[in-house]
Length: 112
Image (cartoon, rainbow, N blue to C red; front, side, top):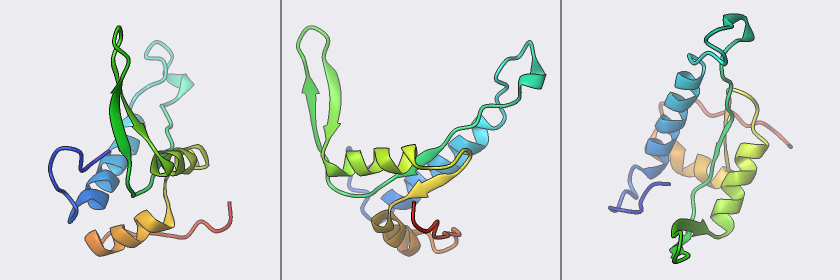
């Protein structure tokens, strides 16, 4: 999640995309089992969306910070439908990302 502390409207999609790229790269360098390198490396999938959210602290005994709204649900769906070692973003996020980071290659995945 970006934009919660300061106004990052001009860079929020680029920042989260760069974080996602770094996360996929970092995970691919982590062994699943250091005692058994043949087990391979960690593979993650990433998804993101851009839009409004509502946030609040929930609970009093064990307070937790929560985000709610369609944006959260869409981002979750992007992640769950993504492929291993890939980053999937919504069309809304892709449009913003093309403006903020035209150097990043975006490809349509097609119907999922």
